[in-house]
View (cartoon, rainbow, N blue to C red):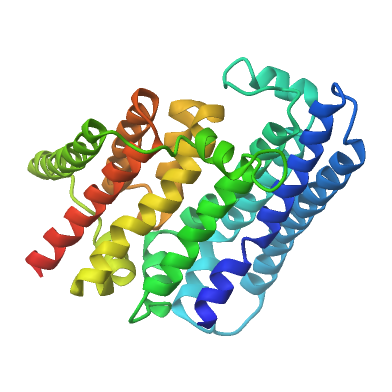
Length: 344
């Protein structure tokens, strides 16, 4: 239960900021663009403080790493030795760079420039905060990528749990709540209106079949791509296989585990990416974020497959709705889980 608690509580700052900025946007719209300034100042202040702390963390990480590197003595572990030797600069920069760009996206002139490429409203405070928060995602991703696949594999092994189902459900349910609150539930939209904004509607029978068949088709595509690339010597990194087994392996051993693998990701990830983000960030950027968030794979063949899956899900969101992409995602994940269980 402790894992479930900490999994959920780490997202509370994001939920609070999204709720506050929707309050600000509600007052701006109700007062012809002039209301909610106090709410806006509060949100922008909290975000700026967060980015400042992130900047300090990156700076201190670099300085502390340099000091450790130059101090005599034996590192505590092999992982620390590797980090102190050649990765400390990248780790620090992975925090510093997003910390600099995040606050810049709160500036209206910069958002107007961004709006030429993305379907955002440069005057919307919700869109401004969403763009800025995307830098937190990049900081997380770049930090993990800077660790390197070998160190990530070791970290995954040290955190391996015999039953990841509770924490996985807690994470994905929290993602679903973030998506709802991010589009205005509990502030400027009713639950029905928020679900409609996310594209969560009752799918037709045709859309259910499209979702199921598309899920099977994506499994076939991923399998074929791995096979063809294997013929030319491009194979899955052993560290990626080790991490996947460490993170997902315990789920393959039971029906409930395979259902969790499919249904939880379909609920949380589709609500966030295809439901909330894609209508504002567009197909390509949303898919890119979707791919890099699966950073436990590093930059590998698996990342390419996730990107292609994300493009397909995004296209189906545009043609149908998020409910359809949830069916696709669940079918895809559960089929891979069944195949992995069958092969083991």
